[in-house]
Length: 149
Length: 260
Image (tube, rainbow over the protein chains, first blue to last red):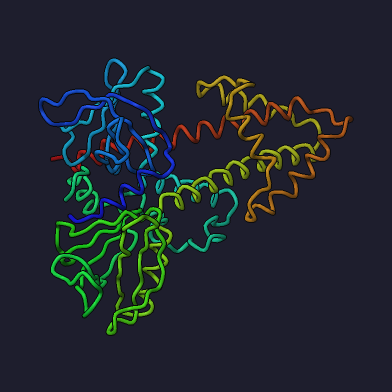
């Protein structure tokens, strides 16, 4: 799959929802915990060596699962291979919760479900479709049928 | 590809997953493998799938491996000067040094317009903006409804107080004690005072009427009002909780379906 690295690097410089230095260990056997600057930008998690400007890598946060790991860490795994886990170590339980919360809200699919939920609730209460004012009420991605997927 | 890593297998898996595609169709493309680097000739016809803020291309509609990925963040989509034979071209331009625009062409004017519209609204930021707007509209609607209901009870006479204990016990049954200082209440209060969305104009009538009376020193039920207000805040919390449960409760099921 072809993609332009420069486009992703540009995205990694966009304002972050959350950024911190965390311990990070990849899914490969024998991987060791490394210090990484971890940045959440939209639905991508970028990780950097602490002395470099460009990211080492990025994880697209769609169809992923965020799990708490003892003592104060969490892991991210992806649905096509749940055994492959990216581990992260935080400084405190509090920081861990903050990251887990932000990562779980970071997927486009989560936003889509939220939007459909709010749209439906508002319509039930007011009898009006709140998306009409934006001119996007017809868009397929905002229809109730999309919820089931 | 270069030095930067990406969880490509997961990305490809998402491209093919059963979550809804936001737009699909055939487009001509230039600059990929097997095509000249400069836009000339008729380019290459590929199947494109827009999913969230990601645009994938495939060899054909049936193909299971994406050829390319463009992340639609920090870019603009505009109609483009097409190579000679292509009338319905458009370009995705990135505001980043050394990044060439992606030139694409649709088969006709309707498809061109639909693609430009879909791509220019595909960013995560746009989605987040709409979600936040609806979130606050729902708060406003609940807030107004609470005020509206109370003002109708008031109009029906001041002997309607028995309704309040009912609501309160409902809250307690669900295991939440009506705490006065819970933070979501502050949110409701704060959002309630900002200008509401246009769609809520009809809710504003009774609400502002009621607020006017509440400010009058002779209005006797201010404390009751805050109880009621609290209760509706609680309902929002419960609603949110149910919604979160639903959203996250559905995850394991999907995982089973998609299991290895």
